Image 1 (cartoon, rainbow, N blue to C red):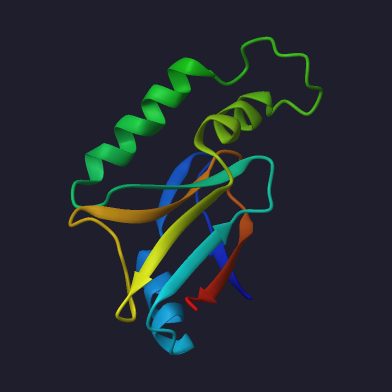
Image 2 (image 1 turned 90 degrees about the horizontal axis):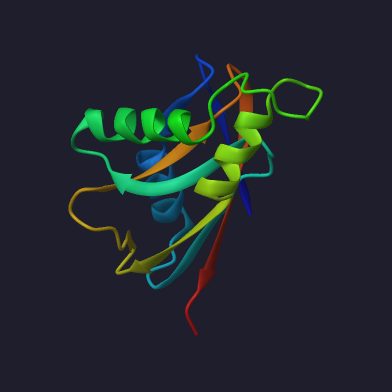
Length: 132
């Protein structure tokens, strides 16, 4: 297992971690298998979506802000209930297949760490399992 460190610079942002994950897969030497990514935080998540057009991640963040707006009178005392809700919607893990030593992502897909309560320094756990 490897731990990736992600430093965010704003309260809500998507950080493209695809290159770092790809490097970790290459360095593992595993040609065929599965790459599991897990975020151990309750106010941050992970997703796979289009990475070619930066407006897509902005659109997703804006839609999540409409679904769970900041400061909307939530009961959670820390003031970040919207962040917990957004993380629940996005999710805390993704799985990507590995074929011939490469992540099996679609042409436009990237892996994004999703910050909803930053800026912070966060972790992503990455585990690669070799195909039998």
